[in-house]
Image (cartoon, rainbow, N blue to C red; front, side, top):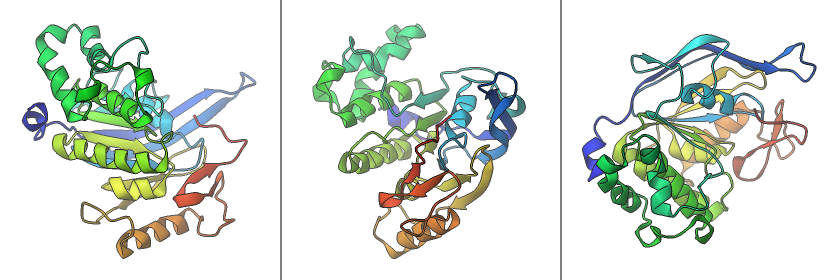
Length: 285
């Protein structure tokens, strides 16, 4: 199978060196600094979760890694290659699956291969990836026939079929209900463990970060930079109600000053299930 053949060498190391990114301010005079002198190293095949208050530059960081934006200063590297633009070796999955509504599940998954002129050579992989995400019975269904979880599995397969060495996940489970979200967390972990693609997950859910990641990167309020990295040394598969899980959850909530029901951080406050809820006036970058 595809996943078995690729499992040993799918991921690639990632280095971010003093990356800074700003955007024009509303007055068109000053610059709004979204990301400030951010440095981070990620090992090949590692699973990283990125948390922080709304507007701290988490999505901006993913866009820089994807090559969709260019840093004002600093460098980003995948393996020995400097990031200078988009590449199929760096996949990006958003909160919205962004499926083509006029294409079936099968054709959505193969759309990247079509764009790269690789469909004829890699057509057998399409069925493999449909099976990989458990959508064999929905291969010919259209997006409006799918549940939220099925749509996200389609988006994951569409990204993974390009064999990215780094997969960037920008809150891909944020719009799902709690039960589907937990099932999809296990689904993403299963894909990661099978393929060992390097994964970076942006999330506002502290429990999700602990449950999924090897390390958790905590970012400062705007302008964002890496404040701290926390190693999650819990055995897999993890139990959400284990004493060790709850202890680590408490430590992170304390670090973010979110331990009280009314406790507030600089840009956000705690909500149900350890979510970082943005203030009404805050906007994500």
